[in-house]
Amino acid sequence: MKGTFMLGIDVELAWGRVHRNRIDIPKITRISRNVRGILDDLFKLLETYQIPVTWSILGHLVLDHCERGENHLPHPDMPRPKYSWFKGDWYQHDPCTNVKAHPAWYGKDLVDRIVEYVEESKLPHEIGCHSFSHQQFGDPGCGKELARAEIEKCLELMKVEYGIVPRVFTFPRTYVGHVTVLKELGFIAFADVPPKLYPCLRLEKTASNRLKRYFSLMAQLLSYYLLYPPHVVIPMRSLQGLWSFPVCLGYGKKPLIPLELVTFKALQGIKRAAQEGKTFSMYTHLRNLGETRTCFRELRKTLSYVDGKRKEGKLEVKTMSEVVVERYDVHWNNT
Image (tube, rainbow, N blue to C red):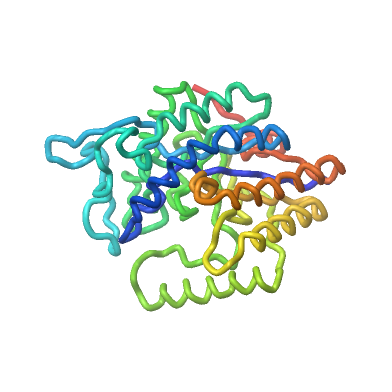
């Protein structure tokens, strides 16, 4: 049995940072402008090595502007989380301007180009949902009402603007929660938490969480320098008609780890998937590719290796929904 390679690209820009106390606005703005500059090169790279992608798009990036409501809050129609570790309003960084003034917070021009590419490409790319504002679905402060509102808002924007109905979901920070809502809204698959060696996802500022995160990050660091291969996986049934795909590797710049070691681990995972007939699922963010040209160059090496294994007849390249539809005969109504 051939192995499978899956590539996911999260499209979120500055919204991937809103759970943090500080955001380096000048840096993320520079990266967001760079992302727009390398997009055509990325499309060419995917076409060269024939790599279909699951593009997980954050709903707020579908907007080209937004305004404050009567109460002076951004998006007053959206429910707010009740996170114990977060102070202030979730949308406090939203500038409520437009894509020209703040390209890190709005991205309709970016999403337009991705959707146009996906529709014109002969590769079976797919568009996935990444919520509306990057809430932490696995946190107790994110209730079911908020989770549903986040997903429905993203689905509404994708349907109205592009006529697209995403049926795969990527949880922000891969912090899984409220999977029953995914089932209720017609999703067939989602990216799941990586197996083992993964930092504690809880953001509550407790001694226990700090220790878990510290030791897990140290284990990850050692795994890179000791050249341990990453896990390869088999998709699992989460609920009837809903499948989970554990992420095997987050690709991009990491603290204290040279990017070349990240690439080496990716190549190990691809080789292992081909040998064992399992799946190696890798994801990255557009901002990773916009931060440094080195990341783009290393990604090229990785995709070239994937293409070589496929030509050897040992590997196939699939999107998340392709695996579900072809292997597990799960389908959906695209309306």
